[in-house]
Length: 609
Image 1 (tube, rainbow, N blue to C red):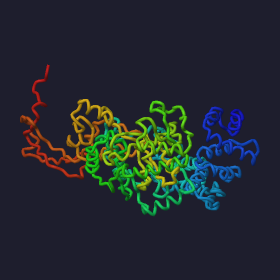
Image 2 (image 1 turned 180 degrees about the vertical axis):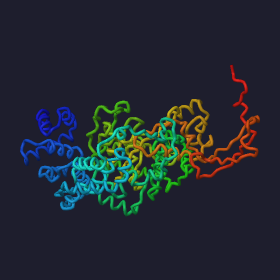
Image 3 (image 1 turned 120 degrees about the vertical axis):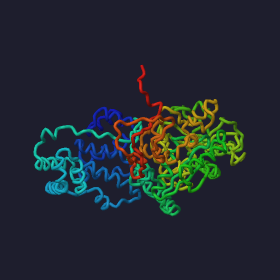
Image 4 (image 1 turned 90 degrees about the horizontal axis):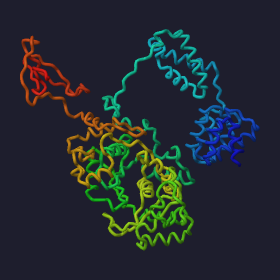
């Protein structure tokens, strides 16, 4: 279909010209929307109202499995799905029921097809909700949270029209309270929020990390229900593989912490440790410590030891300690299978040629399978120099990167496998397959890996192996200090700092050397929270997370002073909390008498000129 014809088709359902042109730039979306509109026009005629057009656009843009598009459009054109709420329920149903055929009766019950909510039912539901909150409404009047009334009424009448419910709530509240007075129109004073790390404030009412990481709090998928996750790709073998996965794990949550053993862990890694081990602990699961030892040039034994030591110092015990190198044989076998399936090829482009997001296509992308198999074997035997050949996968990643490298040549002995291998897998190839081997349920990583989620799913499905789900969270960064491992290595190598445990650094070994207890590190991570966005905080907030030391009073160099008049002929004992922010942790007595002691440097009888 010509661009102008498609533009007219999309504006004909109510899209603005700008929105229609934006849709045309997305080839997959425009193809689905065109199918949906043509199907609707064949049933209803060329003139479609805007409400129907909006539902068609939402169905095409939010549907992950195109095979169900015609099924859903049929319900829209028959006016059996009338609202976005019903459409959302329909999309959720088809995503959570990947097997064919769908149970039509169950689908219609789940989507409210045929349900008619009368004005009388809405009036009765709103009246009941207001009756339950009558006392609070009369006390707070229009300062009361009306959204609470709306939410409770909607929960009683799921398929009722939201605008109709809002109008009924407004009407009945007005009848109960009367018109707004001047006092009602006064702005409610703002409550100062606590725990904002970006401003240096640390609150004392932070939820514990386990509370933040429980399944219902994060809304992650349940083990075995991977297919319910947005963007998860369902293949004909998916359900059988998930059944095998559940038989192995028993439905237990499994996570992993996969550091590269090329440096000492820093404060940013502490959040990753807490997130992975904490999520498993909060949900009755287990967490693997897996070393991503696929780059022998930068790995040293001291880093392996230090990483495990820091994990245990923070209070966590790995379910098992594994290495990516444990699976080198299996990964190589799968690489051969990927080539046989036509999904990988040996390429001779230089590193400089394939850098960036718009490199030229490889001239070897379509080379015969047999030729790639022979060349890959030559790579394994060391017949190519470093940089002369790579194995690349045939896919385009979400960030536009094309055909990521799966294997490269490195003539560096590995600390565990010695000289057995001269080809080593990359992160893009290794990560998801090691997760699959260990039957990880939740592959938790920071947001910069979000662009790799599609390749994660693609590779597991290309090999027909169990596919875990990758979830992303915001990484932790501190202002006014260095938390990049690459930059810290430069500081160490140039002698700017003495070593990885230099107290000026924010590595975990340096923080331990400065006297920070592990509980303070964990408390700090809990206060940052399990947020999706980037967590920026000031390093000064870290000392405020230390809650293990009480508040004693002392003087280094004091001089006596006199109260005049004295507060009492005898000394008084004042109870002072050991922890001002938590009085439940006890008190100590401080004498208050006629003689007081002041730090000499804090006292002067004559002011300075």
